[in-house]
Image (cartoon, rainbow, N blue to C red; front, side, top):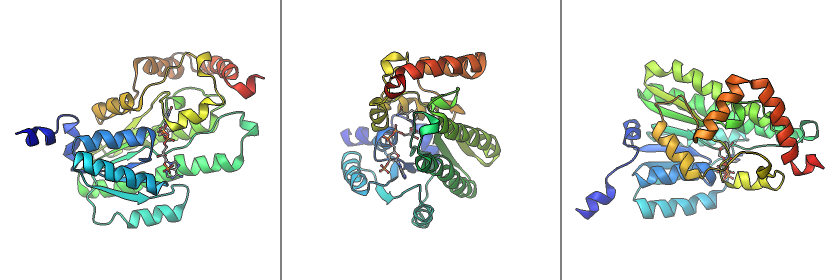
Length: 279
Ligand SMILES: NC(=O)c1ccc[n+]([C@@H]2O[C@H](COP(=O)([O-])OP(=O)(O)OC[C@H]3O[C@@H](n4cnc5c(N)ncnc54)[C@H](OP(=O)(O)O)[C@@H]3O)[C@@H](O)[C@H]2O)c1
């Protein structure tokens, strides 16, 4: 009896309509890793991707042992087209029903002083690879007759975001891609949503914190668990999923109520918060 209760799915049962395999990009840390933990704990088998193969192998062992699920690792650098080609070939024969795309990178600071190489790499990862992976999975899931696609954008793409210009623009692409496909693929029984997290405590945010004093802004961090639980509960019911009530209010004001005024105020606030720009 105890064994049966242990393996009974109690959360996210609606996600098992897509089958028993999910693929998560950016699984080695932060939001992507928490997606994997939450899904594996409910019995979902996983294909996990990222550049850090040794980290992924350790996570595979941990999750297979703790949750009795199957986990497959795919080393993948989404800034390299050859790596993406090899990745697609390696998926043959797997019946993946749910694709979660969490891999991404950020850039911040004065736009005119930014590294063109870094900004182009960001576009390759956040935009071009999102297009390639989403196209690949749309095709597979339409042929399969059912599936789910959850892309990760950012709250920063819902309003004018000075000092995050290329990052927020890249995430705005993801919003429109997801919401347009949501309607286009609806009749094909492929569900598409976009998750737009606000500040979330992950290694990405830790790296930004050396340059930005967030205490000079009203923004509050959420944990990856809060973000991921909201996403998995709200997917696929909501097209755009924004975890946290304060984030939903900021999105509404910044995108609908007074976008330009919000943008001007945001510039002043972020100039104050950026340690190197203030000086
Ligand atoms: N943290 C926040 O405050 C926040 C807010 C809004 C949106 N987001 C978005 O949430 C997503 C996850 O970010 P996070 O905060 O969880 O950051 P994170 O902990 O740094 O995770 C980023 C993930 O992306 C993978 N990745 C990075 N470059 C890659 C590449 N070239 N090829 C393949 N995978 C790559 C990393 O894996 P490897 O290093 O193993 O490659 C890692 O697993 C991102 O799309 C980010 O823009 C984050």
